[in-house]
Length: 242
Image (cartoon, rainbow, N blue to C red; front, side, top):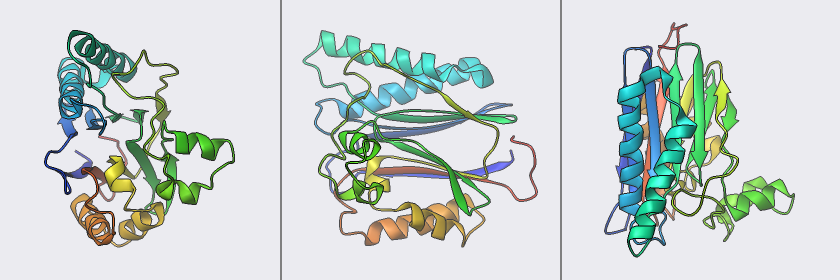
């Protein structure tokens, strides 16, 4: 494979970890996904695990032909059914990337994020949170630099298990050199400038993630939430996507 990757997931100061993370590989594709059970819901851990497992099974069956939007919609319907059959509380975010030869497809719901980088020097894609804070940024009411300190950053306007998903769009790009998928407990403690600074010092996904985890652990809020990330880096002198 022409990419290296590393992942981790920790509970922070919480008694349980509501995050789920998967990396799956086939002969011609890679699937990366992070799901973060909504903190205020009763079954966030179950919701993220069910979503990750559904994506895993679909990828194993479909490989490079995986329809991310269809899979996420099906995961949402599964959680809605769980909520109707129980006391409710099956809610989660999700961020997923399907890498195939010459293409990467990206999809997210909620505030788990996806970043793509070019040459370790600039961000070429950053997902927009489905949150009240992100909406305020879009309306010009909040500076993007202040989103991490906004009390509205965790108020989601869309997540799996709440309602039918609307405007579920898959973003498609031709290539990338580095990629990061992470839950809000990670990106709230590691800024985009810090991601890039760490990236410029390394050439391996494990080293990049280790650098960012050191930055994360030094942040005053590092233990406030579960935190999960997947770092992906193209191998040097590699021109093919897989």
